[in-house]
Structures are given as C-alpha cells and as structure tokens.
Length: 532
Image 1 (cartoon, helix red, strand yellow):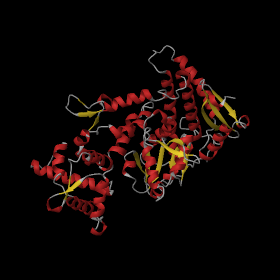
Image 2 (cartoon, rainbow, N blue to C red):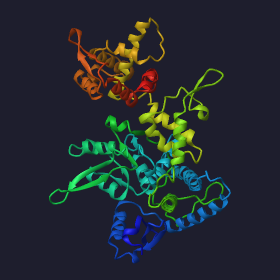
Image 3 (cartoon, helix red, strand yellow):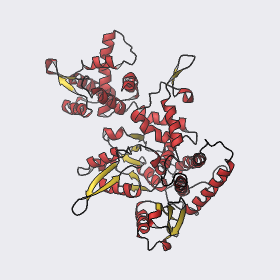
Image 4 (cartoon, one colour):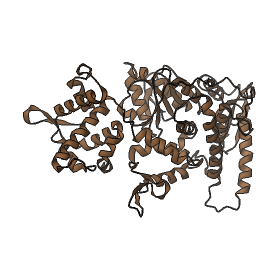
C-alpha cells in the first residue's frame, strides 16, 4: 500500500461489481486497490464514498489504463529515431485525443439532437477539456439557451456520464458548489440556472462564483473557519462548467460564456437515454462493422489518459504534475496562429490568420475573446477540426445572431444608429466606412439619453412590432445604460449627454459592444474595438 504522504493523485473507479481506487505515487507509478484493501485507509475511503454520491465512476478503468501504458511503450519504440525536439508524450496524447474526439462526435448524436452538427464537436471539446482543464488558464462557460423541452437537461445528463467527475445539479448553493469543485474537481453541470441565479439569497453570490471561476487567477477564494474563526481555508472554483438558462444572464457572465442556442426538435426518432445501454450488455456496430464505442468506454479512456499523463509528468518532471505535458505546445501553436496579423495577397484582399485559414473580414481575436475561444480551439487541433470549430466559435461568440433582441442589445443598436447618423451628417455622405474613435467620440458627445430612448422606441416598433405600451420606461432604459457604465452628464436644455472623455468610458463602450452588439454593430465599430 502506498503511504498517504507519498500519494499524489487518487482516482476512484469500478469494474461493474467492485469499486476501488487508483493511486499515483511520488515515483510516478500507479497502483490499483480494490475496496477490500483500503478499508483501513480513511482518506481513500472518503474520496470513494464522495465519488459514489457525486459523479459516475469510470468503468473498465484499470484495463484501459494498462492497455494505454502498453500502447505508449510501443509508441515510444516507433519514435526512437525521431529528433529530440519531437515531444513523444505530446504526439502520443494527440494520437489518443484524435480517437476520443472522433468517437465522441460519432456517439453524441445517438443521445442528443442538434440542428448544427458542428456543436457536437464543441461538446466533444468540452468533454476533453473537463479532463485537462489544469493545462489552461481559462475555463469558458457553456450556456444552454433554449425554451422548455429543447433538450437542455438531456445534454447535461449526457455530459454527466462522460465528463471528468461530471456532477449535474438541479438546486445548488455557492458554498456547496465551491466545496465540491475545490475538494474533488467536479465538472459543474448546472440545471435550472435562471432560477438559481434569481434566488434572492444566493443568486448574486452564485453569479460572482461563476464569473470568478472563469479565470484560474480569479477562482481562488478564502474564508475563515474554526470555532473561533482563526483558521484560513483556501478554495478553488476553477473547473469546466455548463449551465442551462431560460432568461438573460448577468452581462459579465455572458461575456465569459459560449451561448448554445437550442431549438425544440420536431425529430420523431427516439434517441437513446444515458444508462440504457450498459457496457458489455449490448454491443453495437458502426457502418464499417467495427464495435461502436459507448459513453462509458470513452470516459474510461479519458480517465486513463489523464492518469497516464500525470504519471509521465511525475516521471519526467519530479513532482510537478501536469506542467506543460499535455496541451501546452498546441496551446502555443494555436496562440501564434490567432495572433498572426492579417496579410494582403496579390489581389489586394484582406485575410485573417495569415496563411492558415484565409478568413475574410473576421474580427480580431484577442483579449477576452481569445481567452474564451482558445481552449476548445486548441483541443480541436489534433483531430484537424480546428478550422471548423473556429468558424463555429466565431458564429457563437463573436457574430451574435442578428435577431438578438435583449434590451441591452437593442440599446447598443440604438447607439450605433445615432452615431452613424451624426457621422453621415458630418461627412455629407450616405455610406461610411467603420469610423475611428475620434469620429465616434465626436458623435457621442452630441447624443442625449432622450435621443437614445427615442431611437430605442423606433427600433422596437419598426423591427419587433411592439406597441408603445410594451416598451420599457425611460427610467428603466437609463438604468440599463448606467449598468453598462456608459457615463453621461447634464448639458444644454437640461438634457443628459454621453461623456466619452470620462477615463473609463471607452473601455466600457468597447465591452458593451463586444458582449451585446450584433455582427453588423461590431463590424461598424471594428476600428474602435481594435483600438481598445
């Protein structure tokens, strides 16, 4: 038995009849112990019991790990003549990830119906990310946005079956979530997100936890514990997170999330439910006559790959688990491509991402956008689906659908209309290119909150068919403007005008455009966004 002080990592598992734990030692080797051998080990029993109530234990884990270790040794033998610059562990990891990714994309449609097949790729990346989140600095939230019956809970059920320690919750509080994440690293699968965020007792604290947990640096919190509150307890809420929503979420949370709009399916084909087909009970076959993987087997292989990567890391780097072993080279490669400046070809057309993708008129990916997109985009590199996934992420995160009709989005549209009108008047032209900040600033100075309210009403009536009685009051609209931190001051005629010279105005303006603007609005303010 590995002594407690020599245990670096513990993973509970089951073979269908017996539970046990796999233990990684400080020497980098893994030992498997069935329940009967750990009855005197309170810490191992504790994590095994916690796992039994929080997440689905991996099946076939011991066998998958042993097969993966043998496969790695054979892979090393084949790569022995390769240059030293070739990362064998990286090449091997990519090889396995490619298989797992393709299996997930093939199997998920059996359980989930989606109109856009690219979203299966995103869900596959989310599953893989949940196992290797420690290799990244940011954890984008996946928000499922749909009406009742569109399949939000079904997706969460499936994710609970195949993500790393996936735990689906219906009712939850911030302390309970933070404890389960900090102590056990569970993947947070949050159903009924809108109801929990609106909870008057815990909603605000829950939103702050989800916002802070986006960044590894912001996810750590401390609290005083003990009967006299003299001890400090540090907790970490950084994990993969998926949340089902019905209503609008806090702007700061949306800014850190990828929104998946789901449409209620009219598909009459009955899809599988997770747990109906258990490993070994019914074997299915694909079109080529090969055994079709199950969610359980896919999850088990990912658990095995995670354990093997930690083991190799310890053997190579002492006790520094996971430092640059799994994804870092691809992370750096992806980052270079995203930061490659646009180039001009012989025809004079502008393209983004250098000679890799040739995307025309694609917004610059940097800052928060890069933080949200890069993790999933990076995972898609090995299976060569990075371009397809990048296109999807641009559609979901950057090019917000044109029918995005929230109050904030419509206010941003109203600002764009008023700015464009004033710049056209100053230039004496009916068509204008994206203006620089100097022109936008000059236009904003002339726009009052009254002008904005009138423009908002016009959009609601002309675009949305609203009646005057349906439109929010001026007081409500002004409160929304203040919440976006767009400062204004009292000017001529006792009207309130925007104050673009206020130190933080430009930053708040760009943030509002990025988080709530539609694709045409972002294109119009493209030069301003690049300056921020």
